[in-house]
Length: 432
Image (cartoon, rainbow, N blue to C red):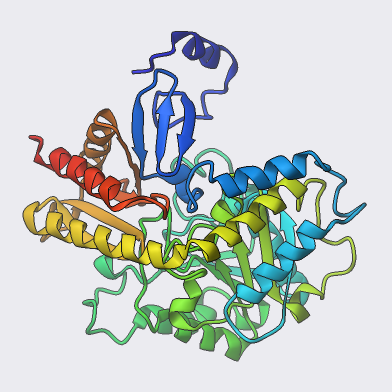
C-alpha cells in the first residue's frame, strides 16, 4: 500500500486512470540499482525503468553532463539551429552499429516515434507499403506502434481501426514452437516460412520491410536460434525487403553486446534505438544505411524536440560510461551470474517451465504443468507481488502474462544480485 495518502488523493483526482503504475509507491530518489520511496524504504530495482537505466540511476557522469548543458542552452530545435552534441551522438551511434556499410542517423523522442519514422523511411525508400511484423512483438503505443504490436490487451483493445498493410507472421518461439518442432532438432522452418508468407499473405514486390526485435521484449524475452536472423536477412535481401532491427530494448548492452544484432553478425538496414540511450532522458534514434536514410527529401522527417541537447549530452555520457567502466564486460558477468541463479531455481521448482536469455537480458516462463505448458499468470503476479513486498521490483511480461523478466542496471553489484535472487527464491517457496 502507498504511504502517501495526499499523493494518492491527488493522483485519483487528476491523473487519468488508464495511465497506470505497476506499484503503489512514489519514488523519492534513486542511485545505481537502488530506489527509495517517499517513506524512505529502499528497493532493489530489477525493472530499471523498463530496461532504461542500463548505466544505473543518477550516474554522476550523466547528471553532470545534463547540468552543464542546462546552463548553456536547453532548446533551439535542431531543425532550426543545430548544435554539436547531436552531431557527435549521430557519429557515435553510426560507428557502433554492426556492419561495414556507412550509416546515418536522425533523432526523435521515444521508441514508438523511432518506429514510426523507421517505417516512413522504409516505405519512402522502397516505394512499397507492406510491413511484416511478428507475433509476440511489441513496437509501441502510437497508431503505427499498436498496429505492429501483437498483444491486444491492454495495448490495442478498443483503439482501432489500425494502420493498414501490416502482416504478422510467427516468431521463433522455441519453447512454444508455432510449427510444432523441437528446439535444436528443427530445420528453422520458422525462418524459411518467410518465403511462403510472401506468397500467401503479402507479395514481395509490395513489401517494404520486415521489423523485428532481436530478442522479443514485452512478448516474453524470447531469444531466437543463432541462424534465425541470418536466414531472414538473406531472404529479405533476395526480395529487396529492408530489415528493421527494433533495438529499443535490446540495445545499449542489454544482451551483452552494444547492439543485439552483433550476436549473429547481421547488419540491419535500419535500426531503432531508445530506452537506455540517454539514461532516462527522452531520446530515440533511427539509424541506418546512408543510402536509405538519405533517400527522404529534406524536411520529410524530424520534429520539434528531436535531438534535445540535454538528452544528447546525457547519451554521450552514457557511451563514455560504457567505455570507462567496461560496462559490456560487467553486464556479461552479471548475466552469467543471473542465469546460473535462475537455472538453480528451475531445477528446484516445477513452476518454472523455461529459463532463457541473452547476456543480462533474462526471463523465467512460469507454467502450471511442464508437460502441457499451460501458462501460470496468477503465479507470476503473486511472485512479483511477494518480491515487491520484500524490497525487490520485478515486472511481468509475455502475451500470457506468465513471464518474469530481469532488467536490472548493468552496474548492479554481485551482492545486490544475490540478495535479489534470495528474495526471488523465498517467493517461490511460498505456498500457492
